Image (cartoon, rainbow, N blue to C red; front, side):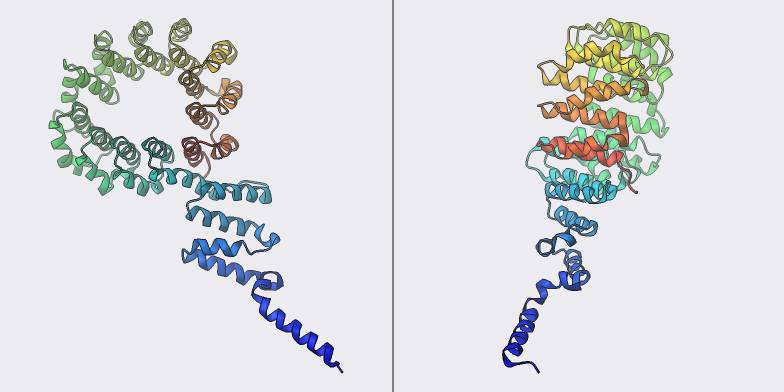
Length: 453
């Protein structure tokens, strides 16, 4: 028989247990139902409440992969990728490996959050990074970008849609042909030039009379691609026009269509008095691998203007079957440092041994001007398999540069030459203090991380 004092104590204990049972539920066997409650809050889009409830979980429960994933996704829904990344680091420690699906979601949010940034430069960085994804999942974001207040940002969004079959079929993409900015209309038309859909012809016809040269040329490019009457002939006429802008735009459009026919035009244009025309011809020669092209490009490596010399170096790097290393080595002492960087990139693309270029590379990496360091970072992205190992070491240093634009260039080059092997470095880029660097790392991760395990 229980004495009264003991009976009162037992009753009191049961009363306390009843009062505190909701808080003790996860510990006393109700963890599964409690987690289901949190999941329901998440499903009902009550993200802040879900986060608050997760904070009440004991350490053991909150450290499970399932809870980590749910918390990460909740933080992403709340527009907080930085805290989501911190939680992801804990998930990786628990699992001892990456979770590709979750990592892609975090990478995407670092980009998407910048598409609404007040700074045009950051929105531009976001859409530039998003273009790396090249997935139908990016289409809604690009479509939203077509409403941006900046013509440059709208053009980037249009370029993103133009890369995708589904994007080119987008109603909003086609509607963008009415945009006020020539850059946007040009991007749409270049997208149409990748499609075989003849239903776009009525949309394109008015652009043939657009006041902007680049728009008229892009419209002619569409008609040439679709083999419409006088489409390619119109482009050839533009390529011989006295207007330098018209001529340069047409040359860039023609080399993808009729490289053999455009060779005489390229040779003639390579001596044009207008630098933009000489630069366009230098770029075009990469599409016509001939001895004449090598001769003209070797001459253009000595052009008075750096942008033309850069275009010549890039094209020489892309040609195969010719001795292009000799003229490129001769340009390694160019008076303009960015030109030297592009010459190095061309030589790396030709398979030149890294140790031969190590001295010039190191000199450019130590240059005071960030533009020069960024240029050499981009150049290293042209390394082929035979010279990639030492290239990685150089890029690892440039990824730690004090200037964001240099880190951005190094991140892009690392992803280009290392693909999925670059994931650890790209994850590190998500922790960068600069928004544009994080977005760039996010875009690279979307490109190299497998969509499925």
